Length: 306
Ligand code: AMP
Picture 1 (tube, protein in one colour):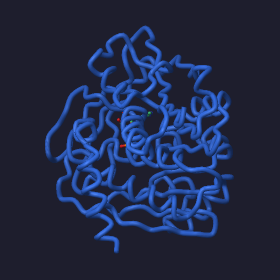
Picture 2: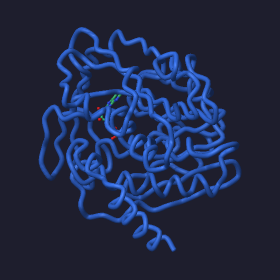
Picture 3: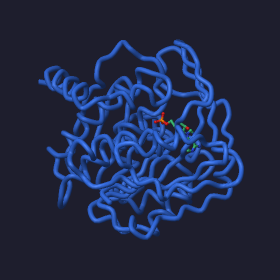
């Protein structure tokens, strides 16, 4: 097992200035897992394992989507009740999702169980989820290279202490600029990033800045990258998860302490992958990303960066 990923599997209803979608397959584990397994296959890695829960309403077709690229779905349990649901909307520049409703459903009583064979992955990735559930997965795994986590404003608001505790336990934190400002209670992004680094024991902090790209603090190094320039923006849901899932696969492909150049390459690939997710509602564009289309856009992005 190269990447072990825990997160939400959801039915999302999303409205953006371009249109809307009802009950589309989504969730942090879905986007993260699809991105991670796509890159694991491209990079010749072993399996990506998913841990999560779905309800009795979860369709076989959606289960098939999760299992694409040979993903190990034995850690996904089906519980009595309905699948987790999220309703959100984007306006204007679509920089941030407005959450309209969250229905925890089967998540309410979820206790993650990492299958025996998945307990020593190369990378443990706790995608956005309640911090207590992220902590439970960290308890059950011994990552061979690195552990990483993503989070969201909801947990900063309602579970700040458990979030700060779990942030002490990972090597890499990936989070939005708005969330960094919230955590540090400081509008100055650089100062806030330094404060968040001091609040945690992570050696790498990756700050996602939406259309403004990404800022990574790694040891003494700082890496800044723009977003892939695109006018084709339909629905940003899952961009952060796609970004993080890509990063997890790239990190799982290396050995030893994470090097700056390796991190930069991973960030470039993560940026390009996220630009696919943007182009459709739900996972359609991410699912349709072919190795050829990805390589072509990587080449284009490297040209922009040079
Ligand atoms: P992103 O746009 O990458 O930040 O993530 C969007 C995904 O997060 C959506 O597909 C939602 O289903 C999922 N999501 C929204 N709220 C939560 C939550 N409270 N816990 C876990 N996942 C969530």
